[in-house]
Figure 1 (cartoon, rainbow, N blue to C red):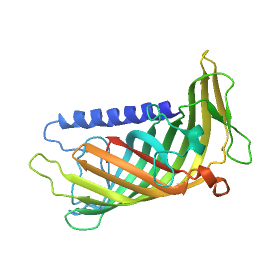
Figure 2 (tube, rainbow, N blue to C red):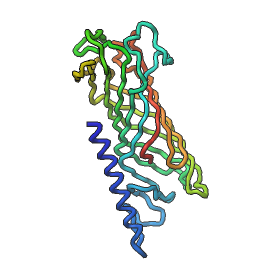
Figure 3 (cartoon, helix red, strand yellow):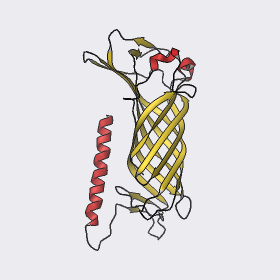
Figure 4 (tube, rainbow, N blue to C red):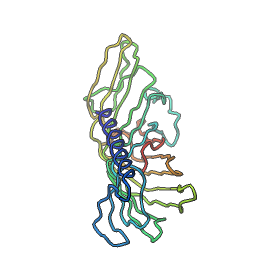
Length: 266
């Protein structure tokens, strides 16, 4: 499903960019994919797709389909090195991934020069935690349970999907002579667990997928920060809420973290 969403996002972005480029070739005609609720000079609401043609006079700017890609991991008491009793959750960062599909985001201008803005939206977060051992997370258990596989595993992975709402403050500098600017965004987010599954592949090639909640915490919240210059943007998130349910914390008191690069920025 994630591949379908990703391909759809890329196709939509390409189509909108192509259509915008076609309009630019029409002489003596200025058109953009813009819906405006107020025709005054200080535009109040604008929706655009494709290339960044944002005007600082736009009070509210909406953009659809943005994409992040990075690494998913977790901390135990603020450390990436897990204690011996958590060896069953030792990760292979190569293969542990984070995808954020920002379905829609809005930026509300808070000052006349559009240097300070409020940002909010709706995001689908996809995480893959690839384990570096043969201990498999068990389904339909009253507590977090791992069991060693009877056969060597080629792949051992936990996947989660969350629906999240971010609320952030955005600070931007004035555009320079290259029509680029620095951006810094920071804030908080909250979300709910939509789906989770384990994916196992045995050395002989057999694949096993199991869907269950695996005692995961159904509510997630945390902080997010983004920094960038022009089209180059990086992000990092941290969730102080436990990855697993409150009753399961104990040694499994893990906090999710992700970081990476924005592929399709605001």
